[in-house]
Structures are given as structure tokens and as C-alpha cells.
Amino acid sequence: MLAGDRLALARLITRVENRMPGVAEIMRSVQPRLGRAHVLGVTGPPGAGKSTLVDRLTARLRAERSSVGVIAVDPSSPFTGGAVLGDRIRMQAHTLDPDVFIRSMATRGSLGGLAAATGDVIKLMDAFGFPWVLIETVGVGQTELDIIRQADTTVVTLVPESGDSVQAMKAGLMEVADIFVVNKADRDGAHALMAELRFSVHLHYSSSVSAKDIDWEIPVLAAQATNDVGVAEILAEVKHHRRALEEAGALGKRRQARRRAELRTLLVEEFAGRVMAAVERDPELVAVIDAVAGGTLDAYSGVERILARLLRQP
Image 1 (cartoon, helix red, strand yellow):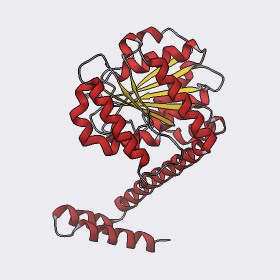
Image 2 (spheres, one colour):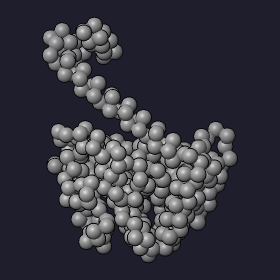
Image 3 (tube, helix red, strand yellow):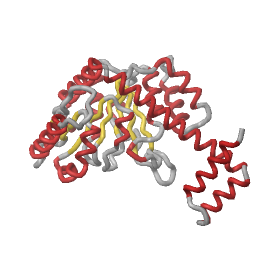
Image 4 (tube, helix red, strand yellow):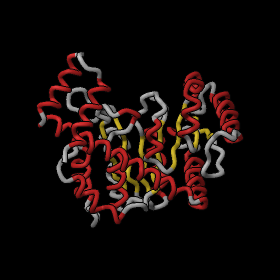
């Protein structure tokens, strides 16, 4: 994969996504090659045109001779656990381009719109040598806050019909978005939605309580991605945001915070796995679990007893 073999990349992604043996060794091997790709997240409610926008952004980047990795996070099939939509029906214009690699991933019940292994797949694409990695989230209608833990720049895509939902999501959206795009801007209500967003953005920017690591007022852009209208302006703002992050030293700090969060998540997963393995081998701890399950002991007391016994062991 490090030598540029696309088939090897696909196979490694499959191993990582399925959490097959050897994932830790794979990630250790690619660590020295990380940090070169800029990760662009595209999120928003269903029907906002995220797939079309990612397709058009990919075409623009290819026109600049940049290779692109795309991760499309799809809903999971309830029968197979695999991606429902799949990359066969996405971005068909790029399927034969050797410098575009598209991978669909199933959420498999992961909350927040991103598959649990998305972070590791981003690393594989980064190590492969893609200067741009684009993530399209499943668009489940929630703010999908965990995209901010993966993307360097986040584009929140809305459509005029989503104006009513903006009020409910506004606080979360302001924390997620680096760029707002009102897609399908030829529809009725587009100007009103853009005006509302710009007013909210300016209030957020002027607020002393909003945490800022760069001087950045979120731009609100209009687009008709289907007709490739406004896409050049979106890509220009993405690059502008990247420069602002780099000049302020915020890009490195955000990535450091992301790595710390990843470490905490892995520690919790590993600790929980080892605790449950130890519990299953200890009849006294199995009795505690049975007592909690039977309702004779509350869960908090159960946790205290399990930890107290485990911590006494050498």
C-alpha cells in the first residue's frame, strides 16, 4: 500500500473496518507517513446534496491535478451490516480515475454519522499519499458532532427546505461548521435561509463565549451543486480556511487534540474489553453481574464491587 498499490489499500481498509487481527500493527506501520492530507468533511441533513457536492469538489481538485480519497459513510444494511448505498452508484464519473479512490463505509450502528473505523481509514488514505481526503457523512438529520473530531475543515450543507430545522440545530451547527453552504439555492427560501444563517454566524463570531482558535467568521455560500454553480467558491473558502489554520498554528493543535481523543477512546475500549474478560473468568464477579441483571443489586454498586476486586488483584 505504501508503494501505491490501490488493491492493497482496499484490502487494508477492509481489515481495519472489520476490526480483523493485525489492526494495531497496520496503524503502527503507517504512523510515520501521516499528517500530509487535508481532511474535508461534508455533512448536513438528508437530501441536502452532499454526494453531488463531494462529486463536484472532487472534479475541481482533479482539475488541479490533486489526487483525492473519498470516504462515503452510508447507512448499514440491517441484514448484512454492509453499506446500503455503496460506492457503485456514487460519483460514477470518477470510478475509472486512478487518482480518485472512493470507499463506502457502513455506520454499523455507530452514532453521530461516522463509522467507528473512519479515523483509521483516513490515516490509511493519508499514508497512501492522497493530499485531500473528503468525508461525506450519512446525514441522519442530527448535528453529527463527531465529524469535528475527524475533519480539518467541515462544510455544513443545507437546503432552503431545512430552514425550519436550523433553529433547533443552530447551536450545534455553529460549533461544527467552518463553512455553510446553502445548496439548491435556486429554490424558494434560499435567500431567507442565507440571511438567517449570516445573522446567526455574525452573532456567534461576535460572542465572547464562543471559543476561537482562529479569527474566522463562518462564510455562508450559495450553490447549485448539480449544475456546478458555486463549487469553485466553496473550494476557495476551504483553502482559505486551511491557510488560516496553518498561519495561526491551529491546524497542528487541532490534530493534537484529535490524537488525544483517539487515545482516550482506545484506552476505554481496551480497558472495558480486559475488564469483561477478567470478569468472565472470576465466579465472584460473574455473581455480581447476575445480581445486577436480576435486579437485586444496582449497577453502580456492581461497578464498584467489580473494580474493587480487580484492583486488589496483582
